[in-house]
Image 1 (cartoon, one colour):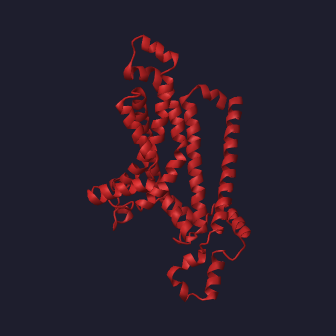
Image 2 (cartoon, helix red, strand yellow; image 1 turned 120 degrees about the horizontal axis):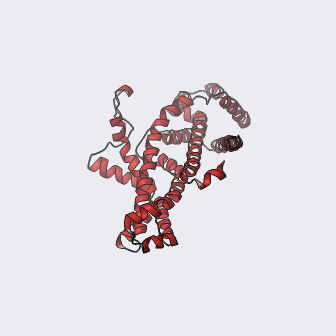
Image 3 (tube, helix red, strand yellow; image 1 turned 90 degrees about the vertical axis):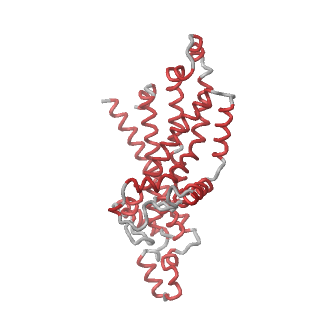
Length: 330
């Protein structure tokens, strides 16, 4: 009973933090978009601005609720959100909730694939580098990681695009599905073919931090007395690491990689722009440039919730991997 009460308290604190986070992020985003020089009405009308009369401008502004003062607009939007209504996008003329549901699957495929691939490759490279400290292999892996860590994501994406898509023609230049096909005609292989280059871009950039962090942990753990004792018994190589080092290195790697969940999501915004991939990041940029307040705030809420859930999963998985933390957690 006591353990259940403590678990309930932990979950309640997490929920309170989530609500406060969403309110704070929404307020900050609303203030930023309102201080932007972009006029939502002019962006909504576009090239027909010269043919629209002042009376029509007022009606359009009143229709979207832009004639109210900023405080009233934000309070009205918050009330609608608490009733489950995220509003209607000014750019796409569709409910924001439907647009988020449509784009979420594409973003999950991109970020999830890149996150898993970068974690596996980063961990393997870090272990291999740490087990061969000071060798040519170690220096090569570190150089590779330093170069990647200092490379802009859009530059790497453009290189991949020019070489693999334009020069070799192995992958499509952009989009998330083949052009000209109806939604029902698109297969999972078509989606996978279009997302390979964006995933490769994100995963290669995400490898560096995990690999360097894992390398340092391997070196640190291999200086511990229990490793030296195992070496004295004749144990070495991968068998030594598997029996005595793997679990100790895995815990920090898991923590490090889950902490980078937000960075992967942020990098996805750049990758989606470079490859014209129809995910949440691309819609978020379009909403900011077009002054689409409902879509921008809806995407910000979904993004904050996305990252928060990732960090929450990190806490749960870390406790599951390390039994010593379970008692303190609950």
